[in-house]
Image (tube, rainbow, N blue to C red; front, side, top):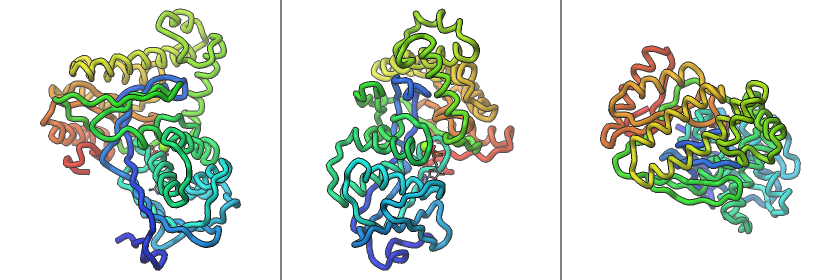
Length: 369
Ligand code: ADP
Ligand code: MG
């Protein structure tokens, strides 16, 4: 049993905050190119309990990461890199203080149902949950979009993960049952309800990724280079009419551009399909997005492709695709209403038998882990 806040710190917490993980329905690797994304919150959440201290010491415990009873500490103003998961807590305090917000020390207990490192944004869920708890505890004047941007800053500036703004916006703003259609260039957003007839499924492949790793960084750099060579500020500025010109760039830049440009168009088409209840069209767009990630963006792996192929062969599935940064992680599928739990179980079983990996069914939660 994990220790309670009372057991760890000798008194009850003053504040609690909860923040879900997210699954991106479509719009992958578009957020750092100024493009469109369409994430949705998942049922699993991160929970933060917090109590202010009189001094400037921060004492932190994570049920997911800490060894039994081991509380880590640091002093505000003396945040130091490379302390593992504590970097997310240190990043939050450093970013807030550099923005001019006054904090005292605090005690914090973190626990999360969002699987760590599975492409469901446990890290943004943690950043945002900490920011929400601290905003309340210290009455900080931070609006909703700014809070998400601070979450991104924590990862960019302190943790060293060059992630875009989609993840913190999704976990902070999306909510369940509708997707968040977000234009990452001007941060305008709109909630798009899922039409009736759909059961979303998320299966974690059991193959892990790390976005702090080099591949994500390489993709970002390739996009920046391609944009510069094509004379635009961001790949968002291009349309399908620019693709013939993009294809003259040295490989793989042309393929990277093609993914981003066609993926932005697919997000817009998916929003229309959701609004019109066109589930077949939605499914076709999911598979097209997967193929684009696999062939043009080179972010899939054989295990993920196997999960998508099993979905393609299943008559109850409309569409499936790799979700999240890639190189492992999770697949999102849309199944016919009422079939989600059974479909997820049979696909996970065939996948386990063929790949030797241990998949986890994350959505629907009732399908079991
Ligand atoms: P993702 O965000 O897709 O789950 P990341 O690699 O971006 O994957 O983030 C995972 C990292 O975030 C973990 O290795 C850990 O350092 C940190 N983290 C996330 N949730 C928690 C938690 N509940 N407790 C401690 N650290 C966490
Ligand atoms: Mg993350």
